[in-house]
Image (cartoon, rainbow, N blue to C red):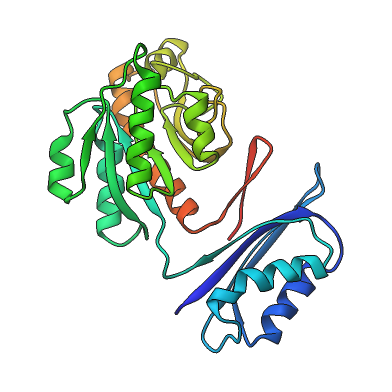
Length: 285
């Protein structure tokens, strides 16, 4: 079924849902999914509504204008976007030497579970070039170091622009992105961190978790920001561990969590279900 999704947020007031649903119904649209939430702290309203375009009276080319007019009629200063079901977002994957997360993403994509296009893989090492060849995806080796980061990030941004990339997934990319790079994509860079944040931010979390004697380890998918491992959290997962397991055991067990958590977060993003509210995320159905 062809459909369109409206993702919107604004200051809460009465009549928003009634106004939007009346607009859709009045133009012969059939609502498939509607979910909304009002954040009690900020009194901000969030809504995701999806409707069938079968028989819908407003042409695609005119819909942005009509939705803008609707927001004006409702007196809303809203942030909103429209997404059409036949438009697939374009995802670039950044990776270093660990391959478990990128394999999970590529296999789920091949099976049709991630409805996006993957035009590009970028890595700061050449080790995983064979994965690009196996899946028929261009693999670009950009040898980023602390010393040449500014120059090499310009090369990466040029590649992203060339391939019309909409969002980026850091699939265990072991380089810190600069604030300038992050600002180019905003909340469109998804990272996986191999701990249950905010515990064990930064490097070598499995070793530190083992030394601390934790009974639970985890992984966290979050939006990358200028603060290392500080961005809004999208998805998390955990597993129990025991005193019998060493740091390497924790790493093996943790990789399973990382793979699932990152793939789940990417799916939520592709389905336009994530809203950022300060340093938190709102996930709607």
